[in-house]
Amino acid sequence: MDTVRDESGRVLVDRAENGRYRWRAKASNGRIVAISAPAYSAADEARRAYSRLRRDAPNLSARISHVKDGAGWTWVLQSPSGTPLARSIRSYERYATCQIAVAKFLAILAADG
Image (cartoon, rainbow, N blue to C red; front, side):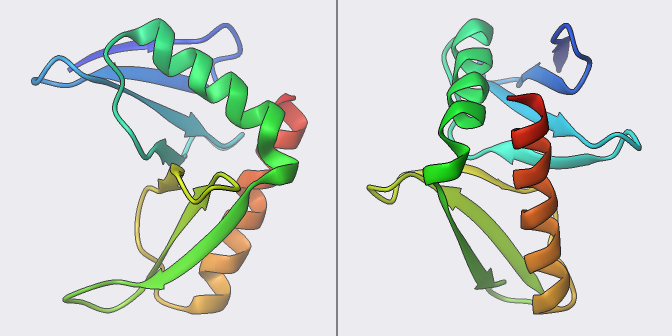
């Protein structure tokens, strides 16, 4: 997997073995907190998608779901039309912790924008 950092170092764009690209967002502590829901055909396309996500963050809604076949909760940020744009990198044991995690990611987007 190839990785490219943006100028802030907050967003990483990875190329998977299948040739598609995804962005990953880092918190100030260096932990990966979110990943793009779709995969993109080019690294620049993934970077532009993250820029749009930052711009559109106030209009996005979060959907929290129970993990299938396991314990825990995950979140997905979606466009007003319901298209998944970003998702949690992991599952959370408690619903409230998942809520906090998505709120923190939205705060990162606001700070970056």
